[in-house]
Length: 606
Image (cartoon, rainbow, N blue to C red):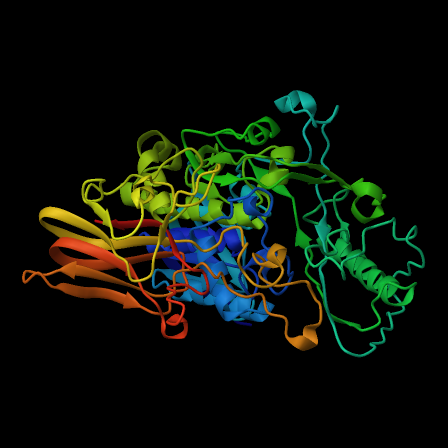
């Protein structure tokens, strides 16, 4: 019998795990010049947000106004909103896939599970994964390894320090710490998807499913999902009291029995208004919340997140509530939410780079639900919006590490400001830090044909803390930078309002950030969730030539992104931005998808 095929490749950065954290880490590293291999053990990207699990993307903006994650996160969400108005999970899968495939610096290995790693002197040399579809061992050598597997697969393979379970109060002095530490975790959930039709639909449960004839038998779990589109069957949850890694198959079997039993209860055990509802999907891959957490140079704690702490090496942020699912899961009494320990946060908190790299393995970084945080701090950092911005942060950091040939610890000491500046230039929000302005963009060079445009110079690219921070412009009225002498312009950067609070978008505003809806009401009417009406759709950038005439250097009538950054190569004494009316909105004189004015947070040239 012959041996299985073996392939080897070299890269600057190897990302293990293709959830949102890993996907965004790979994209960020690639966009900043690193050669990347992304190793994902599933056939699709997205992790808990993928079509295999179907959980929507929650983050800081889901709980605190003005905190919606931007950067790559908003880029893919806007693309999804534009092309996938009914939130079809397969289309969402393809959008994540194409974002990765569009980067020439990324080599994507799908269906490839990381199995082995070699290290020397506390430094990882390579990892090897088995790709099931090709029956090939894939070996990857790299300078930096980023573990976004969620389960911290590299921890035991390279002897990186990690934590499991809930800490005692004495460990970090946390209010909700236990009297005695244990190894219990939050459980994993199995998602259900259904839709409403215009006719009665029968449902016959399999014989092996559990039967819950009463709400009491279902432990009083809140099953009003058909009327509340912003919730789901998160409470079909088990695994916190066993090994959330090695017992996953057995836990999955129990969850499937519960899932079919819960749907049978809604359809057949009492009147739940479900006669016309039809089941579309029951997952076979549980969405996991917690397993192993790495130990970095800093462990984020409950006190940090509740105080909205900011750090000198802050590279990401969170704001989701402390959302601590107790280990008993489904078997706990759901009355009044007793199975979940929650506390709302009112301010964002920073996430330091020191919590995103290993304390004892030199070239190991991580992002997602495995960062260096206590169990209670992890209860807020674990949501996918926060995981995504952490992914972009570590991917960007890894690119700088390869550029300067330094470790993450050295990056904190020597290049943290450059990393933060780079992230903010890429439209990542860092609480308490202002983006540095180009020296070409000053109060002396800025002129607006209408209104006060000074907010374009304040280095804050969103509404936050009661301040608008934007410029409200009229259609066909210019924003201009005038220079005393010719300046070379290499690029422009524009940030427009994409309605981060999703206030002016058709459909259910509480369901607009999600990759798909778990429940579709009146699906036979093809429910659509719209696109931000305030988005600037059409604009033109012009420069002044030697004859005193304006020359168009960039123009679009179909913008659908919040950040537009384009390379230029021009010498000029003036450059201007003009939001324009489009063919469909000329009668109203609009440059947007419906708003009466163009709302712009930044227009900058370099």
